[in-house]
Image 1: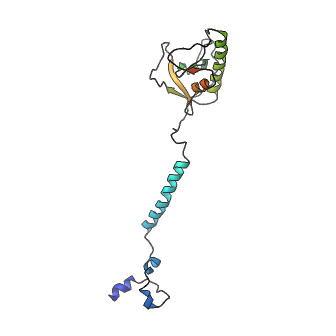
Image 2: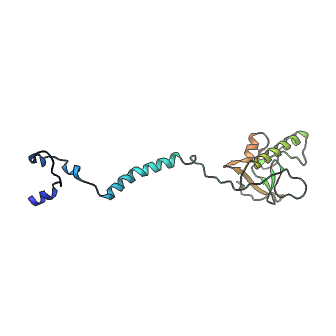
Image 3: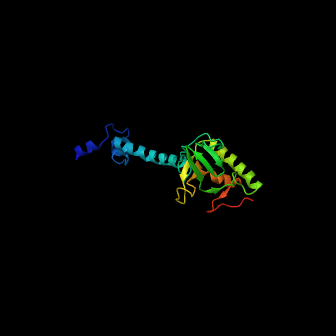
Length: 187
């Protein structure tokens, strides 16, 4: 029994008297050094919640997908027959040799307007779309309805920047209206 007690005693004897030495309940805790694995466990218990906190509060907005707009170009107003990258009107563009109709909006016509008011508004919508496209990169998103082309063979796409439709910007500015399945009257 004495040999077992001698193994349990700390390496350095306490400074108080030996008769109180066995009565002290926490003598092992004061002289016990936890193994390294236990230290790493405590570090992980502290670090993991810290990492989770940073991921929640310093991540992009909740629910927002990270959007990388990759397409860009210099968009003049279309003129003549050699159309590669240009703006036709408020809802049609040429991009890298492909004719694209903005699927989510209807803008006033400039080539065959029904009245002078439609022509003026169409010119403003065309210039505004040109300005939006020349501001930076954008994404050509698929048509939400699933149709790939219209009856004239134009690709149907939604122009997006940072997850926001450029067509919707024109609608908010009063230069276009949401597509309702047919052209609207601007007169």
